[in-house]
Length: 210
Image (cartoon, rainbow, N blue to C red):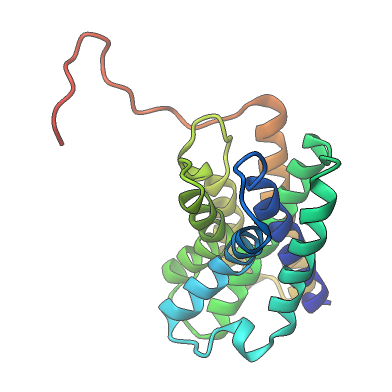
């Protein structure tokens, strides 16, 4: 079951990589690269940081094949028809939730400390999108105030998973609960424009050259 969830998350993330290339005159090869980075970047960074090498998609190339297939198909479809924004936001929220919890479970399997497990879960969820945005010259989504509770939602769900794990014997129920927490927080933030406070200087305060 988890493998199917991972493939779904990779497919959705790859599609967001394809759509990030719209209007930027990126050729098919560039679109495939963006899709792969978005879909596999977070997991790759997690595996490198934890020393779990070769990284997952090298050991199991079907994940790479999935991302490439979605990228090629999405390239030709998106040239003629753009999916509804609401559907993409929901799918992206699913990918964020799945990747974050999958990353946390992977870190738990390596017997890492709870704080590191939380960090690895969040990294798995958001790092691919950060790399994608950097490649297309955009401010990463996690740093934009208009993108509501993105990394924060991942952090909350992963922390809940780690906190409840010693007290919940049903691993499937815990996975559903923590994944659902991220999904609900992210979708609620989109719906009601929930966001953390901004760090803004006073209007008359001069900027300091830091």
